[in-house]
Image (cartoon, rainbow, N blue to C red; front, top):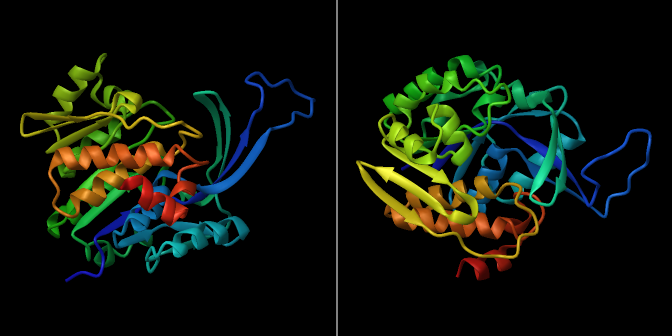
Amino acid sequence: MSKLDITIAGEINLDLILYGLPEHMPTERELLASGFAITLGSSSAILAHNLAALGSRVGFVTKVGDDSFGALAVERLRERGVDLTGIAHGAKSGVTLILPHGLERHILTYPGTISELRFEDLDLDYLASAPHFHMSSLFLQRELLPRVPELFRRMKSAGLTTSLDTNDDPEDGWDSVLEILPHVDILLPNEREAMKMSRADDLETALSRLAQMVETIVVKMGASGAVAIRDGRRFSAPAVPVTVIDPIGAGDSFDAGFLHQFLRGADLTTCLAYGNLCGAFSATDCGGTEAFRDTARMQEFLR
């Protein structure tokens, strides 16, 4: 039996979050924030951290900078028991500066090692040692992207189930995802991403088109919950109401909850409901992982 439940290939960085800044920020002025947080960022690392916090055995392959930001990011994962056997090292870590303004936010990213993970950095035997493989932030994987179809094809050939959360395409192209989807079992976009990649003007059309491309399409809809289609059957689960402190990483936390249940053989409705629960819990604290660092509070909330 594998010692891992899931392997993930993707990016890692810290999020620097400044709260309370004005939406329109003049230049040459010193603007004061009302709050500040340094949290583990990046969709892939947030997913790895929160899956491990839930109790899944997670192996994470990434490239991290040899600097203090990289060391702190890796420490956060090790605190949760994420296996980092396949980690690679680069010169300078990426970092994301997030400026929330109500329900909207400015997101400013220096890529650094975020975009430097290469196919040659991957230990394919290690990635194939778990029953399931996942990838997030597809379009940020600039060095890896040309060979991602091959990566998914190899994981499927090795007998793994696979999942993908593309996240946004900064160039708004979306074409490269189509070659990957035939090798994806579970696709996990939000509403906007689903419509973009399917070239649809509404969610229902997007669901219909994507359901013909992947075995299971799961769409996250925030306060409207989540919906999925598998084998022509539709499933849904309502959102969990909470007082939102910070929505950053809620979608990645949904993925963690969904996949945690999927890896245990749960039915699709249970996976959706648990995904919504974990997404809601994430939003009760800063960033995408801070809520999951408090094990006692997490367990109480999930009960």
